[in-house]
Image (tube, rainbow, N blue to C red; front, side):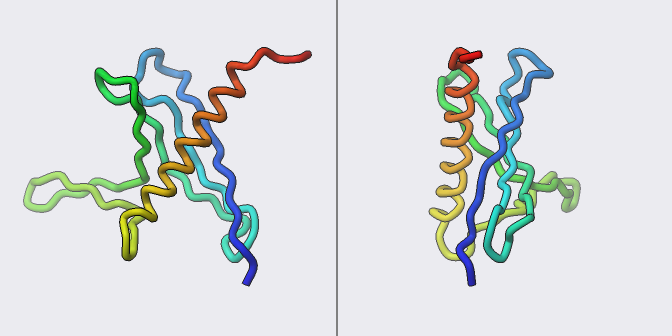
Length: 107
């Protein structure tokens, strides 16, 4: 079994200025048993009234007896830390993307 490697693609949200949604993100599996697949539906958000950001995962809404609920498409198995690690990977990719886009071009 080969080691699974990933890259994170950041798609900035430029369509609505001032929107709390900063970017969408996709996790691309570049090698290993999941190589060639993409996991989409991540988003980076600006927290209300705060300078912090938050990463959310893909989910689907459904209703039970009129109550709206969400079903997370990516869930942790034994420990929540696994999901937190992936959120941190997406957050770090977003920060790198912003740093690179803020650097002046050398051309």
